[in-house]
Image 1 (cartoon, one colour):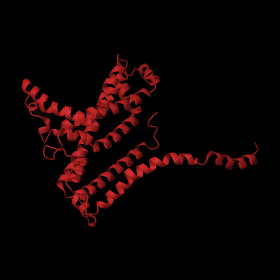
Image 2: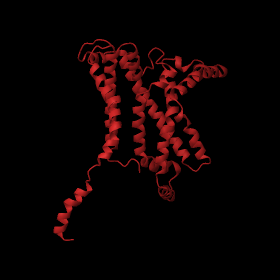
Image 3: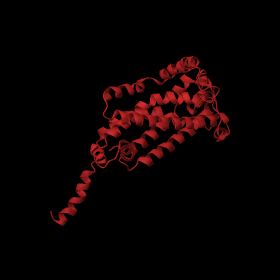
Image 4: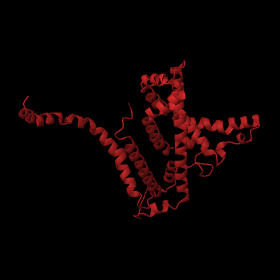
Length: 303
């Protein structure tokens, strides 16, 4: 083909590569778009609007501007809920990722029954959070104190759930127990994607198992770590059912999360005020999502 023919064919080839989208695709998209708009977008916009009013959820209301938002930043109960939620989310993310990564390393090594063990370890993933919470509530309130009395261990004789300084530890344990399987599966996928030739070369060079773990495995699955940390943190910020089943926000308000504060406010007629709280919480979630995109954009996270 001559240069002239190439120049003439260039725009045509570009035009063919940018084929228009068939209308049938939009037709299939329309039902989901309508449902999402009616169920998510419209209620969200309406809720944000009412956050600037004094509405109690029903009846008449008055526009009060930023009054609810200003009050939020001086409300100790709201600030406590944010402090607890972010502290709990941070601690749980650390525990979940460390335990899940170590389990993934073990379950991808050359051990017997690793397929059966993988099945066992993912069982908590399919159990309802509220059921798990009630089971652990019984354990922390009855079985663990009985064990403490039988062994003479003083700090075990009192339920962790009744201690305002330690109740969050119980919540972290239960939440991590449920969240580890999902994180574990992602780490297993990441470890299985690492070429075996890399480890064979490392063994030839004299690297032991610990050196292979820190200098080969961890760097090669770093993208999976980023994904698990950010997704886990976002999920734990929405913690509700496990906390309700364990402590119901107590003792007092020591373990009341942001989601619990919002829902309790709705139930007590404090609709507009808690809608302002929900709007702030939504903006926080958006910022975390933007952080996730900025950290993963342009990376080949899943190799």
